[in-house]
Amino acid sequence: MSFKAEYLWIDGTRPTAKLRSKTKILADGAELPLWGFDGSSTQQAEGNSSDLVLKPVFSCPDPIRGGDDLLVLCEVLNTDLTPHATNTRAPLRAVAERFANQEPIFGIEQEYTFLKGSRPLGFPEGGYPAPQGDYYCGVGTGAVFGREIVERHLDRCLAAGLGVCGVNAEVMPGQWEFQIGALPPLEVADHLWVARWLLHRTAEEYEVTASLDPKPAPGDWNGAGAHTNFSTRAMREGYDPIITACDALGDGDKPLEHVRNYGSGIETRLTGAHETAPWDAYTYGTSDRGASVRIPWQVAADKKGYIEDRRPNANVDPYVVTRLIVDTCCTALEKADQV
Image 1: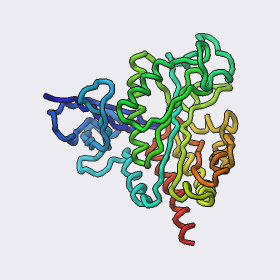
Image 2 (image 1 turned 45 degrees about the vertical axis):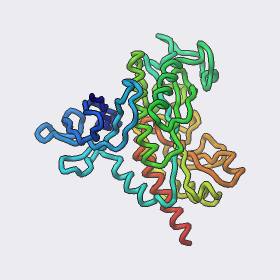
Image 3 (image 1 turned 30 degrees about the horizontal axis):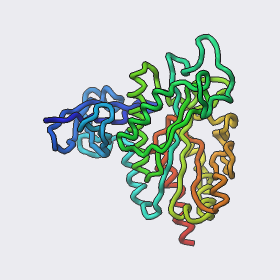
Image 4 (image 1 turned 90 degrees about the vertical axis):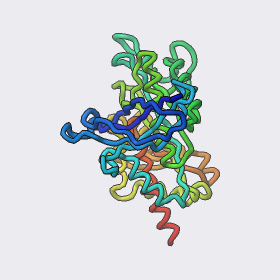
């Protein structure tokens, strides 16, 4: 007997990487081996030296094929087995290991938009739907578009054992969100990449596109983000570390360093309107969805909890955003603990 292993990896497409996958047939009980691929076809190598290596790092049941079949998320390596330049997981692993004693965890809110052709699902041909207002967490024909796809994707994420913790319709027609977490940095990013693959794969079956474009419709419509919730053990136990983390994210060149790595096209979404702060300004505040970083009201009341970085785009690389936040905030918390 044998089983199918769908190897998934992140390619070298710029400015926003894409997911790729291919199927390997393995004998029952076999370990997941390294596997090669043509990097010249994924923007990761030149044709005269095109071989690259897939290294399995996370696997889960394949909810589409079922049975004993697996989804296998991989890191991309050079043929000498060092991390490839496009491998953003390896730098995160180093940072996560360095600050593991602080027990950082994340919850990421992945927004996305269903497109039919070039228009969001629910946008009539040659015109526009009613203004924003009825769509967020809406119900009923005329308010919600694509629910059947969302429900199937949710069921598949749960069947795969991913750490999905909720879904909801978002502010624009055809726009939805699912949440992953709370999980440690590597785990939340791995789960998010696999959930994205399942989203694209599920949308295929309905002949629609699941877009991570941060501003899929110009005009008076909300963009699509990936609000990133973060805490450490100290933040979950007290309020001073929360303020330390917020201040660290706004220190010196940190705001621009983060924003430049929070997804392509971020200036089209972070305009200061539509529940965003301007991309070139940094603020934080309690219950403020117009701030760069929000402290939830319950956190301020309890004097402990987490913060929400509202700047990351829907198309952000979760390995990058978690690495930056852990490095910035945990470094500051480590220094504060030494004072």
